Image (cartoon, helix red, strand yellow):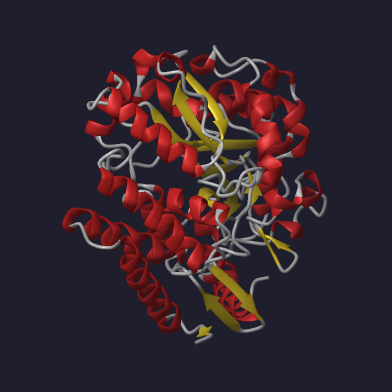
Length: 436
């Protein structure tokens, strides 16, 4: 549960923003702009092909038009930008944000409680999805997708070596050794110091809970035993030389995914949307399997990424913005388009039975039951009790400290201690009480 201190910060910031809006003569309209014309909503999203979906809305809703902007900034940079712009009342109406960053926007009064504009919206999502956006009953975002961690592997390489998909992390390590011994130029995967959300998902699977709160006090446990177990495991494989340590999304990593140097990727349900840009020559060669377990028979997984869409306190038309987000993330029409053009696995429960999920993503044509498989995995996904209001600071420290550790060959476990210290210090600077 979010502490009251988070809500108090949000309430104070929201009240300030609302007062400024009233002084500026801003008021929510009921479907027309201040000049009597159609309402225009500014929407920031980085999704590929989102313009096609927005065009579908605009054609059917002449009184509420949506203008889409695709940002050049990274997701973390956008969060900082939205917080800064809120101080000047300059944010767009609707913003896309990754789940872990939403508490930072709440604490800074950037986003509104959507329950005020649609009291039925929360009922369209399951508890796991709502946990990412709902705090003490307030709904600060509309979940777009759900992204459980799974394991993608090159079926052709595994078949040639007589290997099956690993069901435990011990089996994963054994497969990594077998693959590298058979071909020293091949590796089962890489440990990325550039993707804190990825490591967070692995820690979640192992039982970590980085942030929790009771009343006004936060507990921070980024260097807990579960997280250190994950760090030590990967450090061991890196030390053996059977796993690489190149960051995801780099030019070298993409080239190695495409040329067969890398034959496995611990990723999330959204990966098929990225594969065509990462490894275009390998379409139809990858198979998705459940994430290896720490104990045989344990089907738990974690979450990497996933996003919500939120309405900002700067919006002059929050009711219309909420109406658009309801359509975009819960209607059969919009979700079918998101599945077919963006390859999302919907957060909305109704979207998980759409016929568009009967066919696999184009890149995964060899696995016709891909979405059915994701549907089986999704209910087993663990997350943290709550993402901390300074998760972006934690993520920055992860990149710095894990990157330095990999470069210097020092302890990833010790790096977690440094990330913990940075996160606690920053949280206290923000005015939160942290349990010692």
